[in-house]
Amino acid sequence: MPDLFTLSAAELARRARERRLTATAAVQAALARIDTLDARYNSFTVVTRERALTRAAAVDRGEAGGPLAGVPFAVKNLFDLAGLPTLAGSKINRELAPAAQDAVLVRRLEAAGAVCVGALNMDEYAYGFTTENAHYGPSRNPHDVERIAGGSSGGSAAAVAAGLVPLTLGSDTNGSIRVPASLCGLFGLKPTYGRLPRTGSYLFAASFDHLGPFARSAEDLALAYDAMQGPDPHDPACAQRAVDAVLPSLAQGAAGLRIAVAGGWFAQNTGPEAAAVLQQAVQALGVTRTVEIPEAARARAAAFVITMAEGGNLHFADLKLRPLDFDFATRDRFIAGTLVPAHFVTQAQRFRQWYRQAVARVFDEVDVILTAATPVPATKIGQVMMELNGQQVAARPFMGMLTQPISFVGLPAVVAPVQRAGQLPIGVQIIAAPWKEDHALRVAAALQAAGVASAPIAPGAQA
Image 1 (cartoon, rainbow, N blue to C red):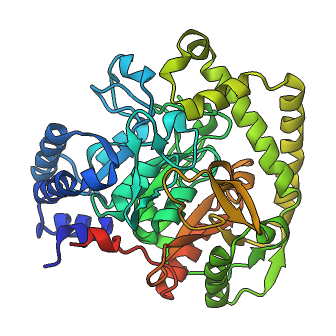
Image 2 (image 1 turned 45 degrees about the horizontal axis):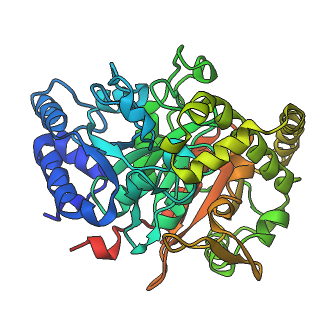
């Protein structure tokens, strides 16, 4: 039998349901691997050992079961876990009272039989693309520990890429699931805004924030996504959403879907390594059409304005009273957010409505649009600048330049990772129309079936 850490979430659950594997054995294996390897990657901020073993025993007794029976998972530390303060990557939140109950998505995964084993490192208050956290240290990319794991869900990505757990949850405001998935060589899903409830999570910018999973296969993404769907009256954005299961549709692959590749601004801001990966996907899918998403550069600028303003407003009291308790890299950006003129925010929101309608017209003609997920592979930890289009640009903000125009209007997107022999992985961003997660996941599954997309455990973590 292969080592348990190499098995997908779907296969672990299948074996648990068939009584060929106990949930306790799966969880013990994950805990042992975390103990052995996580000092190298710094993905976990807390391991909930006793909770996990108690929960696993309940699954083995038949008190909990389902499509994710016995699957160990972990969550970005902005998800509430009962009995723990919800850190959101900060020092300030250590003083919060412990959460009274788990976040809704944690409860839904555990209702499906999964077992939470801990909370994961992130950029402070989810503001960043690198997970270089001044309070808890940087999460390290398992493909090269001198490089970033991406952010702000860097711990979530590193934990899956290292094979510590097969499934994690993260959040995505401007790219915080898609960027780490690309840089760590994983499948990641940012659903439509309002699809999955955010109740029990510490938000960054409420009009942008999405929650979603990381995994090593399209099937595992779909399995987790289906388990987490459903309306939630406590999240106004998600109050009316019905369940729309996608797992059964993966077998269709890309058949019948109208797929195009994004030109214009997206093509111009894709580095050569990312462009080569995107071309592999285009060729595998037989894509011949190019479309342009209009005003993407302005959409990115407007996304910056609104998220800065919302984040600055959220943290205004602490910025006045205890500025030195922030990570300096986020503090200055939050302060800048408090100074954004209301006129700018109003104009950005007005443009947002126009842009939503313009993008909808593009999806009248196609079902799926492909871009690179990040302009370049993972940069070095501490690296301030990177090269793009022959110019030196700031590494932190520019890593999300291909994701921001997509989450600006809440489109669903999946990252399908492409591994390159002897090189760092990088991902393809698969974008669909609102509420069409099934289209994006079907294309990811097709790329996986064609051997273009894959997410093996990072070579350094396989021993």
